[in-house]
Length: 126
Image (cartoon, rainbow, N blue to C red):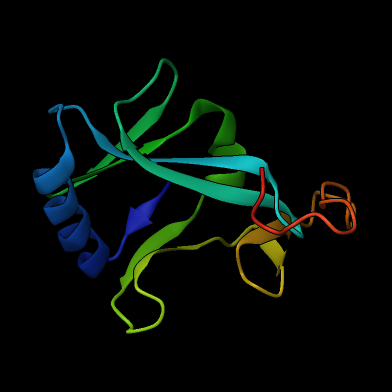
């Protein structure tokens, strides 16, 4: 379903060790409507909810929201420590287009602009 690069696995393990209040907590991923292109990723440290899928890699745990399986299937999570763009990055083979600022995407299954934000609405706003 979802894979982690070795670097992402190490960094996520560190994050969970320092921030998780629960032994079941992981990086919970979901896809929500929003952004310029129509869909945006949501990431937070949380416990799994009913129906979620849990992926473990070493000390890292990724939780995929049940309502986001289809748009996240086949993704790879990487970690970048670039000075200006550090953090977890999702490489999604289903994303056919991203917005200019890189915070949202659309898939081939979506008609162009089908879920995009209205003119004048800020990208990245749910």
